[in-house]
Amino acid sequence: MQNYTLSLLLFLCIAPFAMSQKLEKSELPKEVSASFQKTHPEHFPYEWKYVRKKNAYKAYFITEGKKYKSYFKPNGDWIYAKSKMAKEELPEKIWKHYYESEWFDWKLKKTQVRLTPDCGTIYILNVKRGKKSSKEKIKLIYTEKGNFLKSQKKY
Image (cartoon, rainbow, N blue to C red; front, side):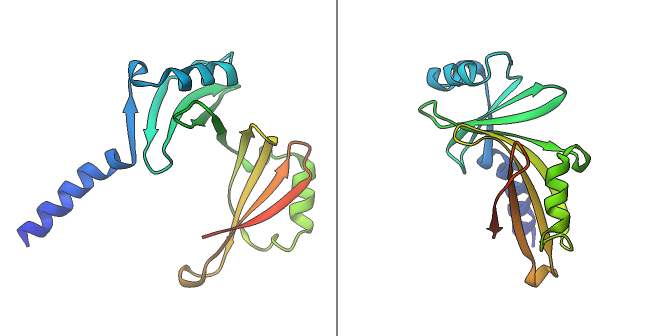
């Protein structure tokens, strides 16, 4: 029993570091740092992490009072930036579509805004229904102008 407890404590202490690791600016590849400055020229990252699971560097910054996370490949390619947002902040056009959609009776879990190199700004609504064993999760994706792009199953 002691070995089990010790193993569990060791895992709980090490697990957070295995998923992401805080970095000093000097540990950051120059390509990643340059890409951040090019992508977000008016912003300053207050923290950097390396996310092993995504093989990506994550920068934390604030713009217009919101905390953002921006992800970069090791070669400096920008992947996307995201921020949580209050449901009340969603454009009215998105609410209208959601209200009239087949997913309206699902539980709206969270909403986020995502900045992407390919699609510009998009909004994502995460909805779910069902019990734990048979839970269905869907992402509803909208353009910056509030037009529905697609739904995507989450697993």
